[in-house]
Length: 186
Image (cartoon, rainbow, N blue to C red; front, top):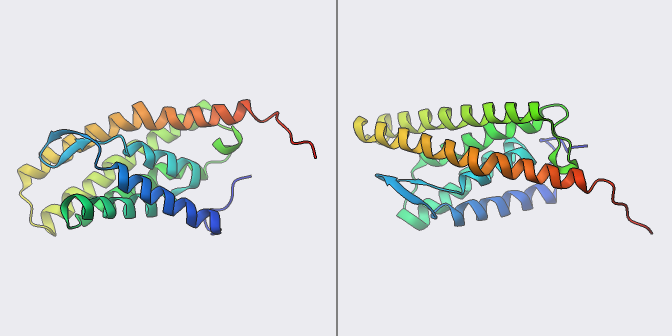
């Protein structure tokens, strides 16, 4: 049985810490595609964290990891994009709440991956809309730059989610499904 997203324990805090560190440390790895925009494999971590640990853990790790990466990379934080990473992971983490979805125990059906795909796509585009509006109205960025950045980031994030994020969660669940017959003799 999956733990409640509201039940916090040492494992939850450690997961957030490790997820934050991994996302922060790997977000600088990417292939540049336009101004300040890259194809970043780290986006797959948001899908994994959200699916395995829920929307709250995903949001916090995505947000804090992005903050760390921005400090290291730029010396300042792009708050709209940092919040956008958290929003993306939170939406991807909505699959955790679906009845019968439990990749830790190998309990995942194909219908869950359809739902996961929908949550992921919604999360990516809602977070990018948020970041787009935040940068224009709060940060004063030019509209034309933001359109290019947002479209490029959306395309890149969607590709990484589909090519790396979904298969990683599927493989994790399949691995756990194959290992459910193991027992420990005492």
